Image (cartoon, rainbow, N blue to C red; front, side, top):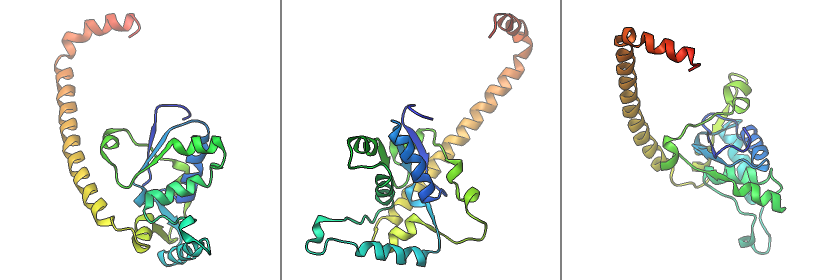
Length: 201
């Protein structure tokens, strides 16, 4: 997986901490990574429990001048980015370079909607979380702490899915036509295929 062109990971139904730790390791090794659909990432535990924990986290601030930090992000993409920042030792040059290789997004914006997306099996909820356990979507948590774009992202994702479905149906039809054409020309191509096979193709 290391040092390919940028890898696009679909965060839907991945456990937050497990995915972030895998991504942090790859960033430190020099891999560029793009995380999409951060709002569909999940955290184990109920929404109420995670809201309480986030409320305690938001209380942590500089006593005399809160504008100096720490800063508590409200959007899912920035929450994920901040988690990974804490895993790459960002006060060193190596850590800064690693976090610079990371991009995080809600939904799947334009260039990445036509790129092959990966999953991380070791971080999937269905693999790691016991059936019946409660879990929280990052989008719902963010919405409850002040993120204002949940509906907008949802509507844009619906549009993207509709376009993707049209594209897939066209692709299926083209593949079926190609298979039919190959079948029709199978007799004519038999000799050609023998020559190619002999040449090692």
